[in-house]
Image (cartoon, rainbow, N blue to C red):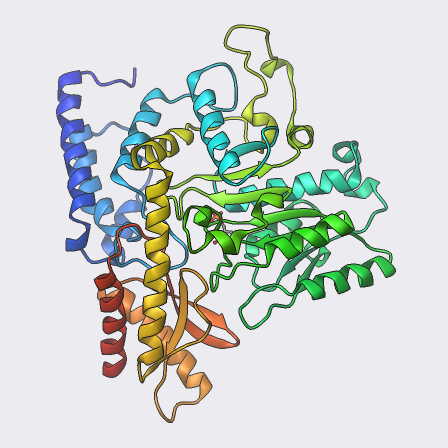
Length: 475
Ligand SMILES: *Cc1c(COP(=O)(O)O)cnc(C)c1O
């Protein structure tokens, strides 16, 4: 009913689309990094739902005109905003193939399940987790962190946690994370019913790393006040400045105090593949749970995150569900337990694992590590350029791959500098020459360059700084 009437006509269009897609990636340097969606295209896209058919060729032409040119730019070598991966051409191809097979990877006995198990096992081993640890692919680290918080909550409340919920428990659970922790951890506390007040925020040192002494003190204080500490969240790469918490020290405290130790390693955890970062990540292998993304520093196209849980049985107990419509069988398609739906929020799930499987096989883990290492070196180089520059200044030491800095003009007060630097971020984005983002570091507005980009050359980094300098001198 919905298949092509004329397969040859479809084939011709599909080949054209594939060629366009390949050119689009190959020629990424020839386009502005970003450009706004023009008003008339926004209006065109907001038209009512079509009730009648349109020839596919017309739909495709409209895609080429109205959609393709106006993406966010993160596949560009000069994209340094937020923490966004670039993807790869092979990853895009794998997405086409995954959608072609279109399996539902919630469970059952088919090959996509085995592919997902395989890629999770690769990373479980890479991160030094035991064989009976569990894992599941997620939309991203936000969902992965939530799953970990729910598992930690279950450990704290006991096996009937799912029946009684927080309302059936007298325990007043509290968790800990540093002030540099990503906002999705707080959101996980909210969604898990713990409430944001149950997440106690710990101070950081000059390098934006959590202070382990402060954690020990907070646990003692909270216990004395009748609260029940249950979880500590460490960062392997903070979102603002790329700091890595002292993970080993956090693991020691968690062990001594019987807390669940979770690590948000959204972009930083794959740093174990890079010689410079690996020693800084010591202690990662001791966590009870680890969340990380494939769509950031592993360059798999959006979206793909993952959570690994040391206690696989507890993980399953926290999420497994049944129903007559999902009865498991000994053999046939409804076999191959456990199912991925028993480890997460979703029942229906796409074949995310295929793009990971392709990417890691094509490049090998080593080359992924080299790309990470290159970005760390480029961030250090940019840090040096800024240090030596008379008008730019660093606002935080460069720990990994994130550089936070600002432009200074003599005679400007703090408020004026904040305004100037926010304006510079916008100006460089609108120039189409590069994308950087902004944040606040030690109460100063900062220009933030985060390099998770397998396409970036050293020249891209230098020219981005030059563009900012040029725009600043015009302002
Ligand atoms: C990006 C990021 C997140 C959120 O991950 P998503 O994949 O965007 O959901 C969480 N923590 C850190 C440190 C991040 O960089």
